[in-house]
Amino acid sequence: MPTGKLEWGKILGKLSPYTIQKGFRYLKHYGPKEFWIRLHERFEPEEVPYGPWYESYRPDPEELEKQKKRKWKYHPKISVVVPAYRTPEKYLRQMIDSLLAQTYENWELCIIDASPKDASMEYTLMEYSEKDWRIKWKKLEENKGIAGNTNEALAMAGGEYVGLLDHDDLLAPNALYEVANALEKDPGIDVIYTDEDKVRGDELEHFQPHLKPDFNPDLLRSNNYICHFFVVRKDLAEKTGGFRQEYDGAQDYDFIFRCTEQAEKIFHIPEILYHWRTHESSTADNPESKLYAFEAGRRAIEGNLKREGLKGTVTQTKDYGFYRVKYPVQGEPMVSVIIPNKDAKEDLEKCINSVLGRTTYRNYEILIVENNSVTKEIFEYYQELAENPKIRLLRWKKEFNYSAINNFAASKARGEYLLFLNNDTEVITSDWMEEMLGFCQRKDTGIVGAKLYYGNDTIQHAGTVIGIGGIAGHMFVDMPRERSGYMHKASIIQDLSAVTAACMMIKKSVFDRVHGFEEALGVAFNDVDLCLRVRQLEYLVVYDPYVELYHYESKSRGAEDSKEKVRRFQTEIEFMRCRWEKLLKEGDPYYNKNLSLTKWNYSLRPLE
Image (cartoon, rainbow, N blue to C red; front, top):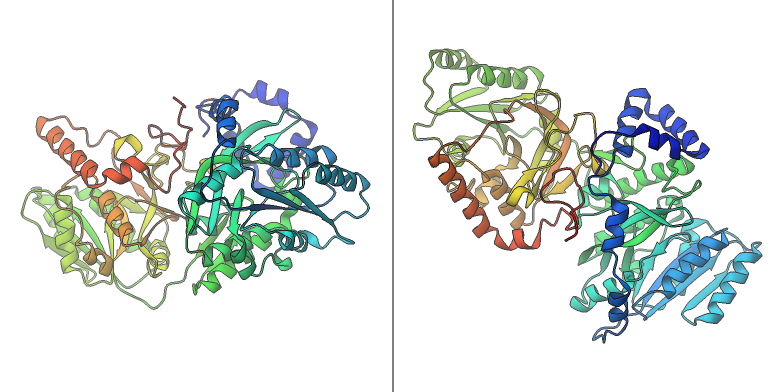
């Protein structure tokens, strides 16, 4: 969410000795260049400052009182389980007080005290359990580790649902109310998760909100984005076998994978209901305090792939807690690369040379769709290309219609996979075709998209969000290539509602099932519409930032500067508004309702 120039004087004035020491650790980890990039991303001022935003966002006392008086039709007990070990008394009290402040009353707190020699913890837990019968605790004779301690707390739970709370974190007062509200609307939900932020200091300053999408399996394999607050039906938690000690440090990641794999219904509450405390020894503030956890996280992803019947290699990225999964190509299926062209000899030549010269995958064909070119040089170039057995030239003699041209070419394609490519692109990554195929071959995936840059090394496309700018828009436009953006979303694999067809791979069988591009959308939004229709078939649309190309589209290109163009564009906008009215009203499930629809960098949406 950052933007603007850094005010280094103010930043340096706030740095504690611990923060400076932490900075040196990160400098050693990333190296000078990467460290400088991340420092800018971390400290740039927010477009909408989160602190004041959160104060206006949180429910006021009147709303909380109203919640307390609600009469429920479905009233499930929610067991909040907490494995506690050497918890500072102040943090322990604040955590328990956050439960006592809940506006939904049918809960119990199940705390395991794994610090047998900590008299202060024992005294505090006795005090609270005598004050409120819903607070249950058990003292262990020895610390069984985070997984073992959590299983002990889970065994105490008597509720229909179980929520996971760390011993030094806090729940918002309406957290369990919102969970119960979701369950009353749909008692069939198995798993619920919420948004979260971080708190620090005695004043519990709120910062770094994590505003999440609805369930996103490829994002979950890139990072444990679900994390907090996680609630699961108790019998499902028991069916999975609970927490596993061999994943200590990432035991929640492994547990979340196994729960979501078996859940019939997964529900995301797009509200900030969990506050993750940061202090010097917490993972939230000091990832290096638990480096073993990131290795355990990698193994948790491997376990998920194995159970899902997927082959993939999991590696850690430079950013702690973020991963990459690379899927090998099965066999050697043919890919048909489809490139429409009118004149533009220089652009097309650069594109074709990059495909032929850099692509390491061998089994592909290139279909160039000639559309009413007039220059002598382009036809001379076509004659050169005709000598290459990989290239076929098709002719589309009708007026320009992007959808119709590509549908025509797709009908002539020999490949099992179609790769739509603009003529003003240039391949950067040599294994781009294998990378896209690895995803597109999965049974659950219909479309794969790429990360595209302008010629000045700023981002042109890092995924598409529905609703941005009215209908749909690209994310992180104009952000420097080396930056990774909010929660590293420009640089990690994830599922989205749409990607651009400037570089898009799709199963031909899926393309045929949806009858190709919508020819009523001759210029704009045809790729978005295609992705949404593929999504309706319950296929995933994957954004893969490891597929990189230049897209030399002019930043001023496409100005609707004639009456005919304006009329056509408005017609296509109305078509999209009518066809996708429900989605536009409800919002993109892969984007959070609290994020801006007028900015494309995951800025907060200003509160009205």
